[in-house]
Image (cartoon, rainbow, N blue to C red):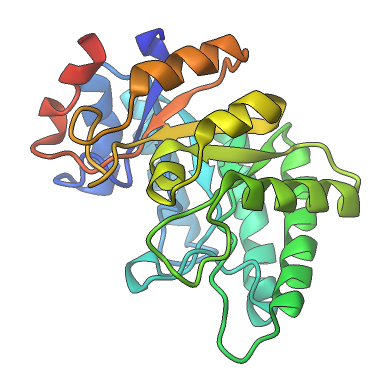
Length: 266
């Protein structure tokens, strides 16, 4: 696995620094590519804040290769708004801002967190809202040659996508409903292994559906080597099935961020 395949998720690494200082810190640590969760509090942030974010990445000399759609209040446990029928407009409004950032920074991979199940709301109504939102998102990012990513997640009991099969079912449903092609699975080894899933199964059966890969060790979500995942195996498998995309480092460093990359050279 070539080390230049890795990018750094700056919403979980280098958090000891202000968000706008992190791209330069990643560059200083030897990385040319970064990714972010949605870096603003609102679905439609102030134009000045968008400009500051774009400038921080440009000035650091790094490329943005992954960006989340607005996902609600992550600190409060929200994991997306697109399947909430009452917030479909909020998600729709986010699409144009995300596309502007993606177009200006050359980012083409966009993670759309599905959203938690809501007490008192029929899951079928949520799934219908999600399909409509994701079709809208796919058509939106298609304008800039982008792809929408669907991610299974661990640690949130009310989040309905837990396995690769869950994610792929959404991918297939959205592709069929909207007659869109650029909807793919985000293969996060940490989340899948933590949920007891078998990442080898999707690598065997649907490798062409993988749009992006993220890693952290399990248990603990630390850097590789702090848990039990056999990353050498999975990196080899990714090469075998022809995955040529980026691999996002989306882990919580066990110490200072700059000291958590020694495993790359090992």
